[in-house]
Length: 175
Image (cartoon, rainbow, N blue to C red):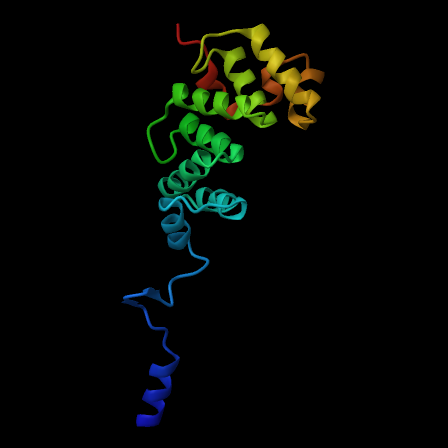
């Protein structure tokens, strides 16, 4: 019996702090990703993990990771922050903030950011409506190869082509 207990204890990970840091720290967990992000330690792979975190419904945690990734210049994280703000996931719905994230990604050269900002401008959601300016951004995203932008062009810029019917209420005029 004592031997069995000794073997179990020997195989149990030690989760303790020492003068040199954490002994046997968590690896490959959401908590670890968030701890690293809080220290500004992000990478392409850790930022991509934000997708799985938000798809798991953990939007507050996804925001924490995406904000750190956006601060490090990852444009995909900027477009995800826009999506979270536009849909009120992990915080209140905020079209102005969503459009600001789209603008930041677009100005960094991201075709998805360009496309999304173009949609924002065409709809007047979060920004002043500018249909021509929005179409120009969609065209730029299409030139960069974004298939959804090409699809919208082919549909004559009919926004229903790229907007789920369930979201029509969101984009309806407010007056």
